[in-house]
Image 1: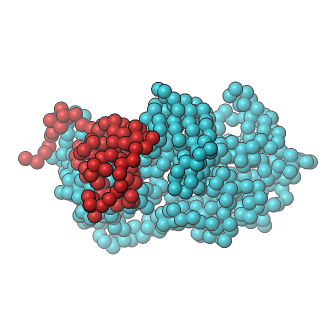
Image 2: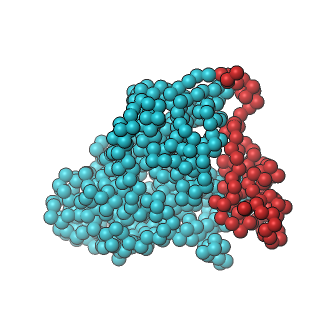
Length: 107
Length: 532
């Protein structure tokens, strides 16, 4: 419903705070997120994959609500209506050497 | 792969309560927590909790944490620390990082008690060093003994923002302002009032325009906003500050539950994505339960009760207790939970503007917009009476679930009744002996002892005082009113400390008689010169 691409959300209008960093881990700015919406990224998952916002060290713990709020405002909808990003293991940043030393898994 | 009857994720108030309850019914229970210390946020909570005796009211958070840890240990719970849970799968399998390896565990039941994470606010300069979460400030001060800065601007006037601001003052940090975009103070009025009377200004309907500084925070500009959250030009205010604390709410950490395919809708009234749970904390996936902040943001007191209910429910789901036993044991807990969820800050009242108390008394508008009850408003509340001789003056003006003051008075001067959220009323027929137990028992520091006939022309005011160094008897200084404005000279005539007061000192100051209902804080002259 919310990712109906035929919906007109108007043109991208530059704003003075477009250079503000929102996702600090991946250094993605507010302007990049707003522009991504206008480029057709209507869900948080799409924005994540397009920009990597929320895919850094903190795994979106800090910025996911901010990204959601910015995207929702751009789309003119309530943030609660925006489909959230999916959650996957590992939940915390984990080195490959740890993942490689997996113990006790089912055969 | 190691198996347990019950795996609890998170060793905070709800997780430890759940584990202790389940283990006491015979479940082999393990708790995994990613932190190096157990207790979640409890060990950072140096203030006294609200509620009733059953909710451990007037006990400080870190002592509740100690009690819970002991209870879990006595029940035979394994608590594994430095152990982040990396994945939770629908068949109750969890992967945990322990040391340098990833290990698999399986529980017949799983309780997610993963708590919440702090929300952030993005404004110009928010990525500068010096912009920190209020929780981080609390961790630095209360766990590690480090001052986060020397001068702080607090963004957010909910209970977290108010409580942390007060703790900053206690740590010797100056709080330049409490700022909130909402038009009313979000947290308990009593928390706001204890800040305001030390002189901390409140800016409601304001937010941060910019954190200033090149490589770290050096100042903050705030401005008033209209009802569409746009800045109103010309209302900018500047503060020198080296730290900005952000306390703009919490979000449930529900990612593991989403991963386990539980139904996790986005619910703004619960603070974000929270699992849909039944009366016993059961999620949409059989055998997976949720308790505490992850299932909706509330206070630690509610989290502990939810944890107990969920621990019992897990025991019942595995056949350790019967359905009848579950219902019998949780009935009392459900009542306790219901009593905490009443009053004007109840989850159901979120976002609603309330204008009068349950008793039909108009709320203090000044408290909601300035952080303190105005002089011409205070007399209408039932805890405020005029009597001859020493008597309690209870400046508790909102219906919050809390009643230790009633139990503290052995003379029957204070009456709340069976409804825990009623405003405390002072009974003028009972004789106050000035013991001060009510002053120390009030978690909101809202009880004062006033004696308008202390000496010819002078009154005495006894107030709760939780700052160091303690002024000495005979010290002279300035009395501040509820807004923190200096109103008269004051002399400390008595300082009382007692184990029964649990670190709340009672400071009695002598002020001119006409200041008895105005003077509410003492500022030592010496402290002022030290600060210069």
